[in-house]
Amino acid sequence: TSGKKILRFIDNGYNGTRVELPINASSCHGMFSWCTLPNNIVFGSLFNTRHVVDMNLMFAGCIMPQGFTLGRHFNTCDCKEMRYMFYQSVMPDSFTFDEKFDTSNVEHMEYMFSECRIPDGFRMPDSFSTSKVADMNHMYYATNFVGKYDFGKNFVPHMFADTRYMFSECIIAGETIDEQYKEDFKYMKERLS
Image 1 (cartoon, one colour):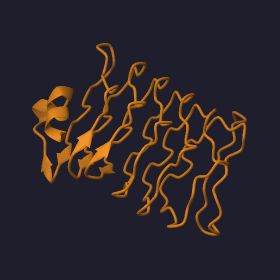
Image 2: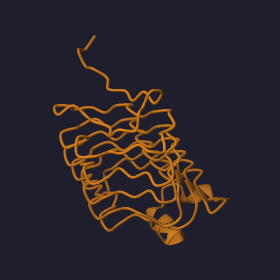
Image 3: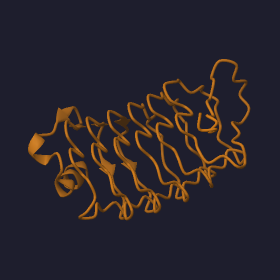
Image 4: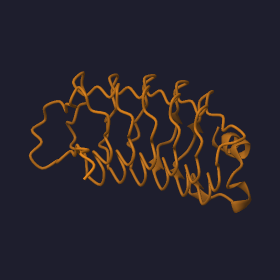
């Protein structure tokens, strides 16, 4: 054993109080994976992710209720790992990222939104940066874009990043894109705007 403790949300027995995170937590790996979040869940000031470096699989397979938000205390400025973070998740129509969803130190985003349902009009904040991301392969693989999507001004895959199959099998407003565009960021940006 590595001595690493896993923090896991158990939704049966949740009594509607705010969700807390231990102050020294450095990982939220799989924390809300494959569960249905209760309608009244709140991420308040005691759910401060400021020092978390591993958010791999954090919301994978998660069904989020209408009105759910990560809140203003969901800070990702120290995070380095976001592999499969929203893989197969269902985001509600009102879902947004706050400016504290800062990805300027993230190095791995493989399959981050793969097979995820992203609502119409979703916009990435300007703090969503891909400047240090080395691996973005399959990042949006088979993602269901319900409608328009804005990548934000700092989503710019750099020339050495692994972007293989980044948009392969994506669905935009019910139509699967042609495989010739599976790595074409410019095409996807234009098509989703």
